Structure formats: C-alpha cells, structure tokens
Image 1 (cartoon, rainbow over the protein chains, first blue to last red):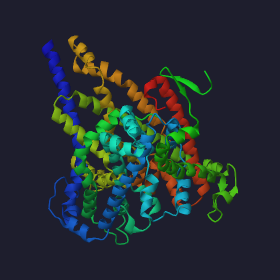
Image 2: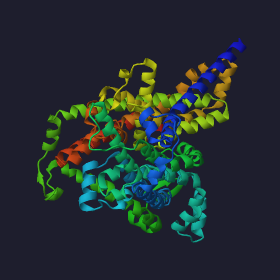
Image 3: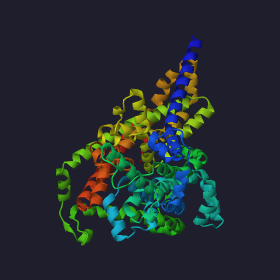
Length: 295
Length: 320
C-alpha cells in the first residue's frame, strides 16, 4: 500500500514537472523564433517563413539596422528616458514615501489618502490629453515621456511599506544627533533599504523602457520616437501588408518591410531586459512578497 | 479627557493642529511637496477637466468658456450603436482574462511548489515570469512570427492537415481573436501572477502537510484538500480586485495587437481603444470625455463595492 502511494506521488511530481517545462518552453519559443529570424537571411524568410533555427545564417539585418538612421536615435531617446526618468522618479518617490512613513508626521495618513485616491479615480484620456497639449504645451518635448509618469502611486505606497518596516530607533537617534530628515533618508534609510529600492527602481525602469503610449499621443517628430514606438510603427507596416495579402491584393505603395530587420530591432529592444533579468529577478520576487500595498 | 486628547500606548497624547504638525515636521513636509505637486498637476487638475463632458467643447473658446449642454454628450453616446459593442467586448474579454489568468497562475504556483528539484524549480520559474517584462509592442511583433500567414501556427496546421487552404488568416478573422488574446494574456501574465500564490503556499504551515502524510494522504490529496482550500482567500481577494477594474480594457495589449485594423473591431474594440480613436479623429471631445467619465465613475463604484466585499470575505486582504 505504501509503495503504491509513493508511486502515485512520484507520478504527480513527474506530470507537474513535465507540464511546467512545457509551459516554460512555450514561454521561450517566441524569443527563440525572433532571435533565430533576426539572424536569418531575408530571402530564406520569404521562401521558408519563420523558423526556430536560421536556415541561412546572416548578419545583414543587424548591419542594416546600425546603418539606418532610425534605431540609433530611438535607442538614445529610450536610454535617456529610462536613466533620467528612473533617477528622478526614485528621488521624488523615496522622499515622499519616507515622509509618510514617519510616525512623527501626524497628518501622514491624509497625504497617503491624497495619493491613494488617484489610483481609484482619474480624469481619463481627454482632459489629460488637452491639459498636456493645449495648456502645458509638452507636445514633442522629450520630457513628456518622463514628467507625466514621474510618480506611480502604487510604487510610492509599496516603498512606504518597506520604510515602515524599519525600526524608528534608527532615525530617532540620528535626529537626536542633529541630523535633518533629508540627511536621515540618504545616510541611514536608503542604504539599508536596497531590496525595496531595487524592486521599485526596476518597476520604474521597465515602465520607462517599455513606454510607447505617451509617444503615440504626444510625439510627432520621428527623431524623438522611443524604441517601443519605433517597433510599433514597423509592426503596423507588416500587419498592413499581411492584411492586403490576405485579401488577395498586391502589396501597395511599394512598402516592402524587411522582416529580418524588424526581428533584429525586437532583439535589440529586449536584449538589455533579458541580460539584466537574472540579476534582478530575486529582488522583485522578494519585493512583491514582502510589501503588499494598503491604503 | 479634554477634546483633542487621545490615549495612546497608555500615554496622554495631544493631537497637534495642522499648523503645529507642519512646523514640527517642516523637513518631512518639504520632502512631500514634489510628489504632491505632481499629483495635483497630473491627476487632480485633469479630474477637474472632466467638466468638459458637460460642455460643447470648442478649441477656440477653451473648456470653461464653451457652452454648457448638460447631459447631451452622454445621450449622444448612449444612443449610438457603438456603446453596446464596446461595452460587451470590454466586459467579455475581461471576464475571459480574469478567469484564464487566475486558473493558470494558481496551477503554475501549485506545480512549482510541488517540484522538489531545486534547479528545475528555479529555472522554470525564471522563464515563466520573463514574458511579463515584454511590452505589448514586442509581444505583437513576436506574434507576427507566430500568426502570420507563413508563421509557425499556420505551418503546424498545414503540416498536420496537409492542406494549405486550412491556414487561418488571423488578421482578418475577428472570430479567433478572443481566444488568441486569452492565450497571449496567459503567456504574458500567468507566470508573474503566480508569484503571489506561490508566496501564499510557501507561507502555509508545513506541519499540516506532515500530519496529512502521517495519515497516509497522497500528494494529490494534499493539493486538493489542503493547498487549494488555503489558497481560496487569496484567489477570491485577487479576483474581486480585478473585477473592480473590469470596465478598463487592456488598452496596451489590444491597441498593440489590433491597432487600426477595423476588420477586427467586432470582437476586439474595447472602451479604451474606442476612446483613443475618437480622440485621434477629433470628432467630439465632449462626448469622448463623457465616455471616459462614465468609465471612471463605474470603475470607482466597482472598486469601492468590491473592496467592501473583500472586507466581508477576508478583512486582512482588503485594500483599504
């Protein structure tokens, strides 16, 4: 009897392992497909379609990409937005998060609610759009990709929860020594909050890196397109051709999208995320587990 | 006790006035100011701008000088036939997303928790979370390689049936899109969603399982009789919270995947994509804002209601 049960237990574990590996493979296949396609020659893609392994290896797509005048500026925009945006966001967010985590600040709950309410109710697309374009005149400014997304209320409250977990005695003793709150934050609180900062910083950085919606709304000048929006434009071209091909029409107005260079652009975009991911993964798993957001 | 005096930790505690509080904590208040200014400028001022939903907006006169028309903008939207399509699509797709993502996330969490081999567990967990960090524009580009007429899926279909006419022209077949979007949603979000469930499972007292093992329970019985019932609260709470957001379509996903392909609108057009389109076509700002206001108000009511429900089901898991 005991042996039989052990057998069924082993079977359960084997089935689970198999299923999870299948799902993991499904998660990986698109990545492999795109990477392989980006290293395939254009003619091979047109003849054989997309494959999991390059039939005819070629670096042509990447050479073309670096010669073209779209990718490099877009990379510049995205890197600027991600680096400057994340730094500014972290500065503003951590200062406010620390302030509303201090028990000596009696009205901290009111400030927290003021912030929390913006998660519950929003003006929506039209008022925001008109406000930013007609009144703040931020159209086509690179800062429109940063400033309207500077503070994320969820991230702020997540960080406050981390700070609340730090014993008061630490900041109290520094205060007695004559330090002001800004010094306490930078010299004492931030250095011991690395997991929390890493989690929130990662969320901000990813949000900036993956941003395209604001570019769609506010950026007209193609020199200021961030990477993600460039990809969206490229992808629209393929879809357009696909649609026309499906309807039996010939490719119109001479747009022949270079399949491989699109895939190469995708690889260039996800590259930094995939490379940094293994180092950061443990932080956000930890971070999400520790700090649940409460208003 | 005098008014304004509270007993706290056995000590007398005098409630400071707002001015006293600010004077005492001037550094802390100063540190809040950038964030507070941000929220006023980019959240609260646009809220006031919702007034545009009640006027006949003319760019030349601005919001406050335009003619007040009461509820005309709302009437205009609710008498159009569009509103039924986009509301049903939004609700239908979101129900599908919530159900499929919850089931997939719970399944992944349970499977990961049952795998004893440390390396298999670590590597597979890392891989299934990864798609969450891909933007929908990237996913959409990936999916071209999958669902194009010469993409992987059609290759498999043609390969299995041996007949090229069985290939699906995804980009002009609206009927397959709800299923396709659900698959993409699970692919992108299920692994990330499993983190919370896995944390709950890890927090379960191990002695319960040991006791069950002593009584001769199999692994499968442990899952169905111990793990799942203990996950119930988390599942209910997260589901209630996502129901609160049911009026918000997944704009990023649907716009990136569908874009301006009007052939697919019958099954994929949601409130948010409709809003963007009416904004771009610049037809009637007042009406577009009115739709946004209805969405915000309904969303707000639902969040409050679902939170009240969560408070009843398990108070410690409610948001506020």
